[in-house]
Each structure stands twice: as C-alpha cells, then as structure tokens.
Length: 257
Image (cartoon, rainbow, N blue to C red; front, side, top):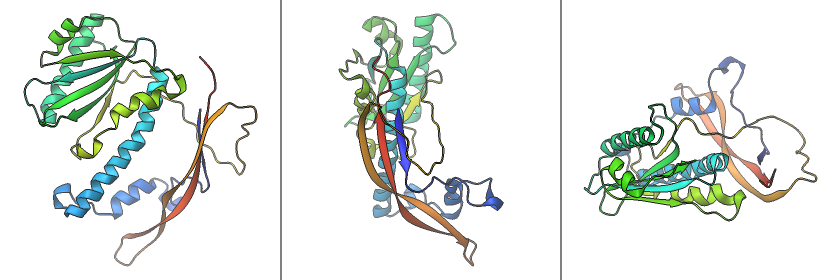
C-alpha cells in the first residue's frame, strides 16, 4: 500500500462556474504550445527534460502494475530487427502483428490472452528494438519464438527478484533508461488491456492516517510545484502562478505473500 499525504489539497476544479474543466485543461488552453521543431535549442532541451521527468513518474505506475501481475512465470523478452529499421510506425506494426501471432500460437484463439508491458528503444546504430515483460507466460521454445517473430534476434529470460516488495521498481528500471533520446512525440510504453491495475482511493482529511502497528517499510518527503489559477487578464488569457506543496510518501507492506 502506497500513501501520498499532501500539505495542500489536490484541486481538480477551479470554481463552481467552471466545474467541467480541470487545471490541466486550463493549462492546455491558456499556454500556446510550440511544436518541437519551432522551439529553440534551449527550449528543445527543456522539453526533453520535462518528457524525461514524465516518464520517470510513469516508472512508478509501471512498477505498480508489475507488482499487481508478477508471478513465477513472468518473463523478460528482447526483440531485435536484423535490418536497420528506424521507422517507429513500421516497427510498432510488426510488433503488434507478432503479439497476435504469438497469442494465437499459445492459446489457439484470436482473443487477447497474453499479458504484457512493452517499451521500444533505439540502438546506437539507430535500429529499433523492443523489451517486453510477459506475465503468466507459458513455455515455448526459443526457436519457435524466432519463427513467430521473424525479424531477427529473440532473447527470453525469467525474472528473478529476491525482494517481493521491490520487484516492481527493480524490473521497471528497464522501462525508463535512455528516455531522453526517445522521439518526443512517440508513445514509449504499451500494455495489454487484461492486466490487473492498482486500486486508487482519494479523500480529504485534516488529520494524518493512523499507521500504528502497520509495517511501514519506506518513507520520503519532497516538494512539488502546483498551479494557482487567478483571474483572466485583459487579453483573455488566464494568469497562472505556482506554489510549493510538501508531499509525504509512505509505503506499507500489507502482507508477506
């Protein structure tokens, strides 16, 4: 169980007259975004840094999904192209075809039964390859995988993690490295729709949660900036300031299995 305690409440509505719009929507409306090509070199650098931070945050989400689905048949697969294929649209199409062929080979039906997370990367020569985590993955010979893939090298490993409460963070590190060199507009992560996902509960309280007799295994405290929305200016744009908010993170081990 992961707990986030916020010093300042998380506000998703601005006021009663604007209840249909979130803070994110106002930011999108009021800040005209340049395309990556229109940015200066320094702006492109800052854009990539923001994207890197975004994917670092997503690593936590991925780690939680791994924790929810990890079992003794979880496998880590790498797929490479023998040709120097650098078009992500082409490789994503071939990856999706591979998943369909593999699913039919293993289960003899077109319904999606494979459970997986996947990420693409570029090698130094520019060629794209894929890392995939399969959950509850049945036995299949490597030579059969090579045939089903049909584009190059296939490597398959069982994931061994000593500490159960850290396995999600351990495995997810393979999904966040070298993100600063990813193409900024391309989706980096893929997942099947049949994965278990964490249960998230949000509530407001003036007192902290009582964690007496709870098995707290990790705590951390950090500061984040949150937007403060003010009145519209004369030119019709919305004035936005930022203030610091302290966040306390607590991880509790609920069970030992």
